[in-house]
Length: 319
Image 1 (cartoon, rainbow, N blue to C red):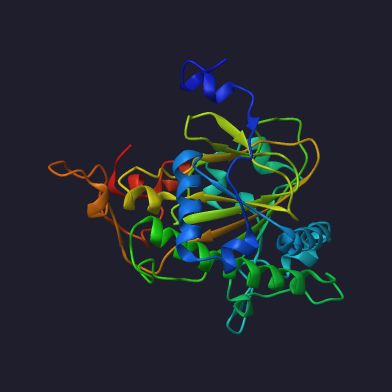
Image 2: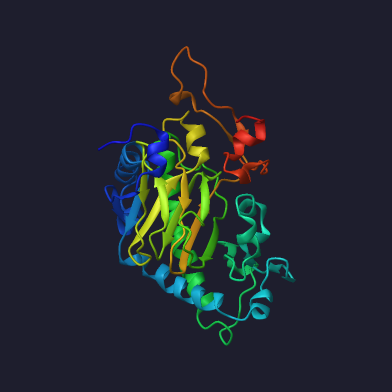
């Protein structure tokens, strides 16, 4: 039975789908046109792509090391806080309630909890991040650096595919190092105690989790439960910039996190672009019609975007 309206879709039980998958090896080694056609089909028909294959095993390994780090005494974790700097390197760890992107939708109880959500954030340039040594967190930094090399390669290949989907030449999407956030969500009995519905101000986001919690909006508006398989499935969703470039033909995927009874580990890789104008490309605007979206700069700051409103909308005062 279908849902009659948006409210029904919001409260309907999420369904699990796995339609458009692609082997990581094909993405990395396949012909650009073949890969682009597969990516285009996935984005246009399902709104997202799922990468699969044994090559993703390092993600599961890194999540296990991250989970061990989150269990260390608070004083030891704080040595790697994002506010700590040593030379050119900065720490990556923080409590998620320290950042307005997260606290804007947290309840007072969640802000005061003794077991808060945690995050370790860093870029592909891992030498710019402070890492705990092997004695304190065995294998953590090594496993993360392995994953970053893999994800950077995947991301560069996806950028090429997305350029082809846009009908643009190589190099149109000006590369900048991707950003990763490892997250730890403690167990909870509150199903909506996770992360509010939002989209990302990027070209695309890659997501992995060890428990079913992440929900992504399908092209029909219904919620889809993303797979919980760090060693074999990586979800790719288009961000706000693809929606703007395509004048809405490839919408940014809205997504959310629901609470789980058991602790949950996740990884999010955000791929943006170096500072450049982002707006509807001519080929996506019908002759004689005006573009449906504005042109903005890719490096605009958050101005209320933490509320769940797309960053570009909050920046120009839209609702």
